[in-house]
Image (cartoon, rainbow, N blue to C red; front, top):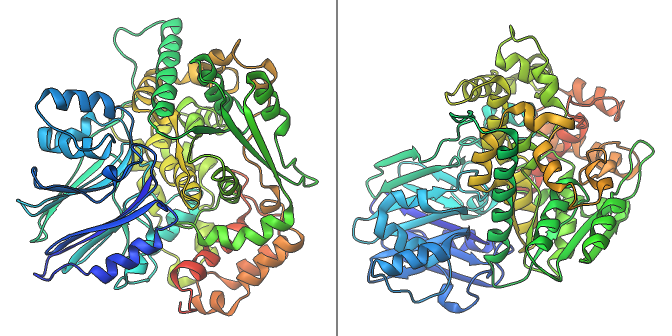
Length: 597
């Protein structure tokens, strides 16, 4: 919905307002409708607004409630804000706006930090208590909305994007070896609190942070996802009915929490098609749907229009599809990488970037199917991991099929100064070993839903859509739906090739051809099978003076990949050469655009 930023000083100085202005300017595309700031001695808040709920100036931010002594900047949407508003009215609170922002202010005043347990939605916010001189920051349960931090002995800064923090100045651009190893091992995911920069951290999902002007702080998780069977355990029919009710409620809630039209990003797969089907079942008419495709490569088809067209015709949607020629993809590739809040490897990134550019011309908010595969077991590697010997450790069973590179390969890929320890294995082993999961697959599915998804598909969708001032909502990450899904036996989710509860729900609602089709995605095959101009772009990046001067990669490793650009793929079928170039170009465009490495 927006971009937020701010600074809290610990050294007795007033907040740096010029730095705040630079951070706000860097997020103008996230919030093109309004910009505003608030300051109170050591504290300054900045906001860029994308108006979705209560389009009037009454919901502009920062929102300052003088009566309560609170000021707030907020990015996201609270889907149950109407219910909370009614409850707060019953407690005697008075409202001057009709949006969800003011509901957070009143909810915090009424219930304190426990208000987070009542908020259903996607959010990152910062709330300043003018009486106590404390700053309260929080992030939603699944990290759908980002929150980047930079903290030292003099001040804390925060922003909705890493480039915005850098724009404020006074932040080291030194790389973090741990973040780099995570980046290249976990398919481009760098779980919080890490980033690839030493001086920039992320507030973890489902976490709150309270900090005062003396730099005294308290950070705590406010929610934990369990993956266990209830006692007594329901039968299969009851499980499936719960999924249907929860998903239908999530779609209705997320579609209706808006004062502007909300469309659907329709890939043609079961997930996004289900969103369209449930909206139609709920009585929604004139549904806006959007699909994107690319030119075929000899190895892979570049679009899924056959299936998205089937769904659009079946429900009579107001459908638009966009076929992007390779020349335009190549032309916009540098721009798409530069728009990333963090370096991302999935080839879907440019697809979402180009699709969002077109969709924003029609609507300001969309529903997207991200999260369904992780929550309902849609990926092929889940049963493969489960088939590994149970005598192996959970980490061994997982890493063999998910890690993009072994630690030995990572050590050979990086120059000696950057060949760090295996942080990814330590992190994954710890997350898999957390209590509250009944089986190995429960551990894996929870890890995906709470950690890995945050910094791959979820970050990608938020980042690439908000680059055009388009809000993407993800009903499959509705809290109640995910909690319900995690109570299901993994075998039920993996039945019939995965996502059985969703396929069962779709049967009779969607055309069978869409349900029974092979799994697809937003394909961008030119970034997987590198040839022509795409290969030349990558070679220029990796042979550039900036890349050589930075000295991250072992040159013999780079040369080996350049000599065979389509011969080196990760277990998840990412092109390793593309990974190297994507990080390097992001560093050139975002971290050292002036050529300083």
